[in-house]
Image (cartoon, rainbow, N blue to C red):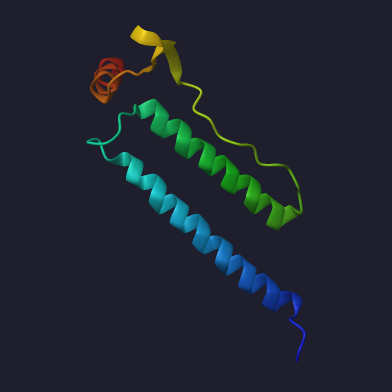
Length: 107
């Protein structure tokens, strides 16, 4: 039995992990269904901005050997208030309100 080389180990693990990330992105995209979820443009910007930052950090580890830690994500725009009966109700602006604000900001 031949021992696996570092290259072979890298290819095996990198392919598995890359496919796992791609599957997670596909699952995340399911959240874009407006019939099942409510989200704002700011939520979308924050999610993808965080993902892009994580990708930059991960790439830097390959390119320059840096080893900064990646952190867990949580939407900062989420505001929860207690509703009737102690329920927690998320306050969100609708996407239409966001679109109206963006149109009014255009000179």
